[in-house]
Length: 134
Image (cartoon, rainbow, N blue to C red; front, top):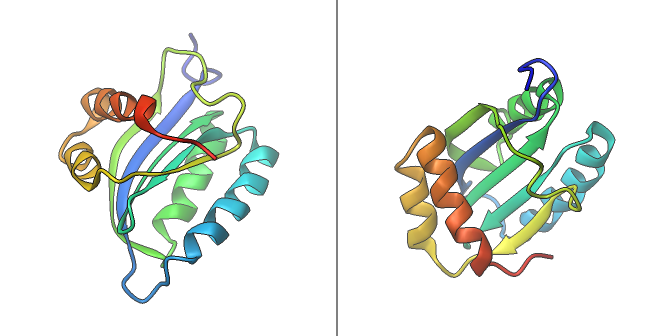
């Protein structure tokens, strides 16, 4: 798979900014669905009431562009990039511009935030079967 034309992805964890109401999460999901569809991106945002964990996949330039806007977004803090680069797999969320799931397992998101690279991706993927997407 060519790195310049293959599938790229990122995974990050962050915390909701204390000044933001939890209702802002709906606004984030709605805007992401529109933007991601236009950029040929797919992925998921998981939120446990305090922490976000997002995985996004697609063309390298689109992934990098959205990642930059996320890093500049003041609706969350303590952004920790767990993975960013090419992935040798098919899209995991091909039917979702952005899936959304709430997690009751804060500990699971905290554990993912402690890892980097492919280890973080593996832990994140283990969480996915336990989530109810919307």
